[in-house]
Amino acid sequence: MKVQVNKHELEYSGFIKIEKSRLRFEKFNGTMSEEVTRYRHYRGDAVAVIIFDSLCNQVLLIQQFRYAVHARTSNGWLVECVAGMQEKGENLEDVAHREVYEETGLKLTSLNLMTEYFYSPGSCSDKVHIFLGTVKNSEQTTEIHGLSHEGEDIKVWWVSLETALAMCDANEIQDAKTIVGLNLLARRIQIN
Image (cartoon, rainbow, N blue to C red):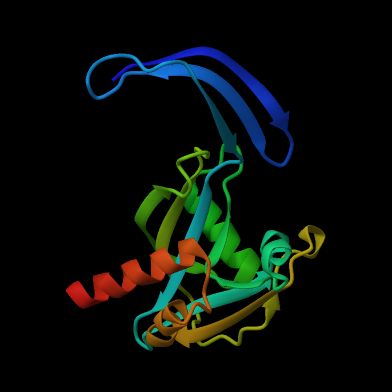
């Protein structure tokens, strides 16, 4: 199917970029649409890691302050899986290793891609890549981690997979990548 971009301009370039385009697209009946305006914002792809200890059937969760959530709910302390942004020239696996170490102090021993998806395709072209990972020393004491120069203060703890899924059901985990990753892991365990 065809897309004809008639005008394309960068509206904003900062922490995110916002682009405005005037375009026409081929409709399912084969004709071209009228010209429409579409916006796209992008920052870059994100990598998320569901860290799983199969011997104890537990996952590692983190909690940190997220201003955007605070601005919407007045409670910005979000429970999530480890995640971070891909930097220019960095491969996805390197992002996963870097973020797991920065946010937990642990080192990955295995890493497998579970899925990748567009998290908001109506306006954003960024993808989230969710990996399943295992770490050395899963019994290692967890504590507060994160990079101080990035203003991070990250609480880390292990919880059973069953408890993590119950937290999703109870709306205690409201982070999409974490909900998707935990449910994919549960399905994989159930199938195997």
